[in-house]
Length: 70
Image (tube, rainbow, N blue to C red):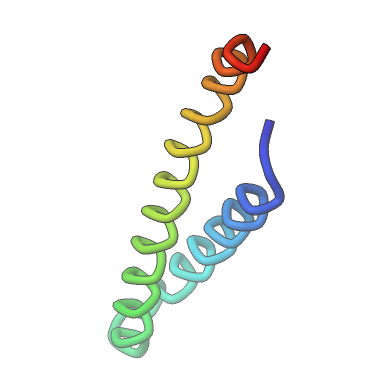
């Protein structure tokens, strides 16, 4: 079960990682861009993991809460 947000962020992560690999072929020329992209990837990865942890809690809790409302 995944949301559109999870799909899009995962797709962006793959594209950005591929871009980073390309930039790392010539690290001296692209040093600033590599640093910026590395920071952005780190942030995106953290957002993706935090979202998944939060959503996993709610996805698991959904069945547990349904009995309380009856």
